[in-house]
Length: 195
Image 1: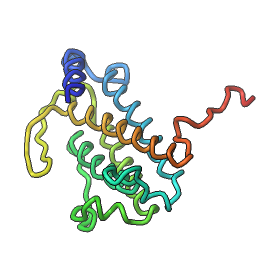
Image 2 (image 1 turned 30 degrees about the horizontal axis):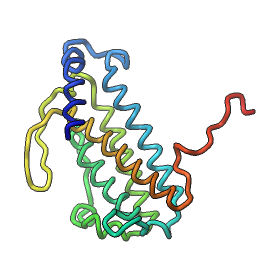
Image 3 (image 1 turned 180 degrees about the vertical axis):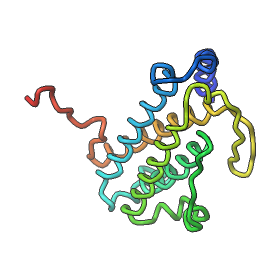
Image 4 (image 1 turned 45 degrees about the vertical axis):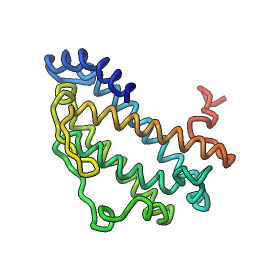
């Protein structure tokens, strides 16, 4: 939590300055552009990671206290909607099955269903990011989590989202390595010029 507060403090001055500037391009929105860039990178890596893990491994967890791979996928879907629903006026809609089923049950759904739902949530988040500019990061929002309502700035949700994805990508990467699967960021990169 201290990391989140330090990051928010570090962003406070640039965000308030950005709010005073006219918004016309990516250069006028350096903070939002940076957040979006990191978020899209994590989205690609997470989607690629889940695609590369065999369905038989979706029940894998290193210890009984840790989440299974399927549970991480279901949890990410929930988290993506929680954070990205607070990026602006655009809100996701859910089926009754999706909104009332616990993540522990969703974790047992087939891989293709979990991965499809994850990718749909990532697409929603990408669209939600399109609503943002630097001036809107300082807007106060009201969020509800586990039945508790509190006020926060929108940047809290944007920063929380990218930290959450980084945390779960790291977790998933470790699980993959424990199963002799290279995570996307460890795969060899193509050499420039194709040589």
